[in-house]
Image (cartoon, rainbow, N blue to C red; front, side):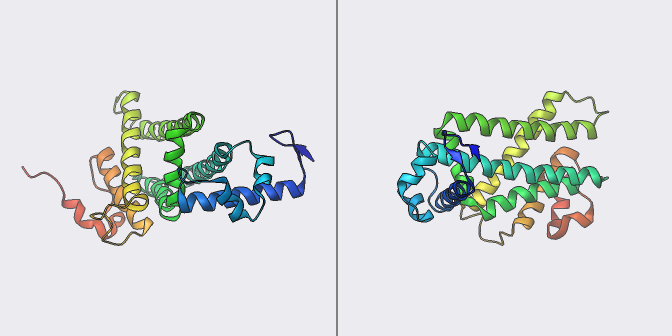
Length: 233
């Protein structure tokens, strides 16, 4: 047994109960979003008395924060694994690792749009979570910037420019995925929304911006026509 966050003794039964509550909260967040989240809905989803929620969590915000911090941590771990795979299998053109990381994000948005919406809602209303989420996002941008800086070590570009590029292009990807899966814009969702297809499209845009060239022809897929999108004269 171990001591819990609220001074309770964590038993195997207690661990199961807490996980049951978190799983229920995750389902309600996915369905309703953070702004509509109510403890009574979580208790009903978990099929437990509401008093049990207060046994483990002092308030609704603490429960939501724990669930969403775990969601962010899981997402970042998937992104880290995609980068680790790059280290084991270096891509000479740089497109494969970009595609893998973007595909991780696209699947997160496609499979958990309610959670992705809730992340932004909690960030907007809870300063503690905002600090956590912004630090995690900034750390990822720094890692992306460092990789770009290594790849273009002889270019003489200021590190601040690499950082700005990583942040701006990352924001482009997040905004596009939000508008496709979380709050779909009608003009964007008429076609197929397969996350790997969307990831390839966004990765091509990112690659063209950074490398000032198209990815290898075999990586363009159905977007091969984009190779001819260039200014004339």
